[in-house]
Image (cartoon, rainbow, N blue to C red):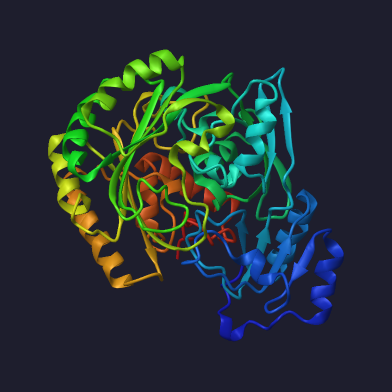
Length: 474
């Protein structure tokens, strides 16, 4: 591929070129300022603003093939979006943008306990389809995100401590590579590509469908315990010891926030600081209740939503907000989580601090630290907890959000393990190659770069958390 063209020397598509592209695909084609263009490029995280040369709302895998070949012929990058939760870089005028939501097929094979998911499928579409057969996928905490991109980025959900990363249970991948060919990647067919896509995400092609394993899960015991400001310190110190002793079937995390006095916030929390403990037990409700009873005994709660629930309602445990916005994110994994870390957390985002950043710490461990049966590029490390700090831009003082994020990074520096999880590295803060490399072991990253050089030497798939190819020798 030739040198990438800058916006100043790139000619806009001619009417004839647009017609040729439209004739080659079943899906609709949109140019800037045409009705439907903005709707397709806007994602969940509006801090990443896309302005591609053309958008193709792909209808099937052949549309992807034709679009990639068209981009190749024009020396353009190819960007892919389902919901835009993990967007990192803006698609510019040298980019062909694939909107995949129309590719929303879900096929469940209960005999084999697998599901085939097309590129644009959301987890909320998979959950009921699997539940019809008493099965569940390894979905994330927010059911309204894209299933394929989530899975290829690793995937840590409420069943992960028991079953591992979602990427660990991918059986088959259908992908269009930079040469415009639709290929299949499995352990037996294109095994290097299969390894790289599970963790390397969109750096190696446009994935049109994946086949994932399902699990016999119909119900879980889960929900949230919301503690008031005056109990936060006692609860967190107790939790740091309690979590370390829980079985793999128990998933837990906590989120700290000065809750806004706004519609959609439960009356018990409006305008108050609250510590939200999220809990999910994969087992009987009786055993789940026994395990969390010490937490309930610590202090009165503002709200207790922990109940026996069908797995299709698992999204209510975290209750992640579905509203698009402009977000600034920081994330890293901790080398330990103990009383010193708790004190540091409370000093920065605890009661009375009026932080502009909400802070989540999510428990890892269990199967997340063990290598999977089919090796992949995801770093299976033994970090006990992950930090996720989120601030909303554009609704107040952006400088305060950025300053508080800087303080969070400085705060956790003594316990920063140096590892990251790709799926949580969303938004404009995590785009450089050095940061992206921290989602992998050094050995895996070197192998990924070598495979990138083999499969995408011109870096067509670069509008992402990019793994650059190795430059040719001078």
